[in-house]
Image (cartoon, rainbow, N blue to C red; front, side, top):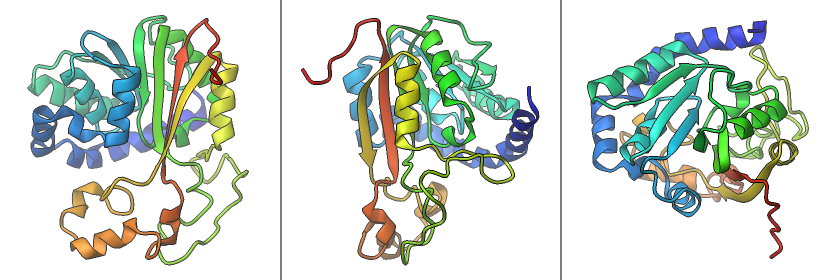
Length: 272
């Protein structure tokens, strides 16, 4: 493990306890009662179109975050493996799974190499919000994802849109340019990366994955400019101002991005 990876792992080991606010029993109970409610409607539609029934499908979630996406896939009937660099993050999510008798696998691994993940096993590989900033080698990561997918398996990412990082996206009064769109990285002390659309798509295609769908979305209400666990406590008129381009200019741009690709030896002609 190189020095950068060690540094990132140490950071997330320290942050992991803070993420327990997204794993409260109240939140988990809501997921149990309405699994799909965790995902915004656009993502639900993508799942139903490209994955279909999750029952008995092998699913790999890269980057556990709060673990909620993995919990949803399990509740929908999938056989779920969660991979994360942080052992603490995995430990906390595994505790939730144990309390509810959910049979899930948790593996500490590097998202770029997926060296501990079995090849040709997964029907669906999902990367949730917040992971891509920490990836320093998209090409290798997508080669690894192709390796672990079954033939015709589906890959999907959901993250902040690349149009956001060039601006001070927490400035809701005016558009303020922070950096050039082409200034990808490494950036800052933690050496994060602000990938462009072309970086995602070109790396996927070069790795041999077939691009099949892209969705550019506005931020889901109450989840982008305000932490979702605090949004309910805000006055509705104050919260609504964030989701109107007249009162928040940066809302005119897409805040979120999802890309779907398929592992297939058959060339897909998107013009037909």
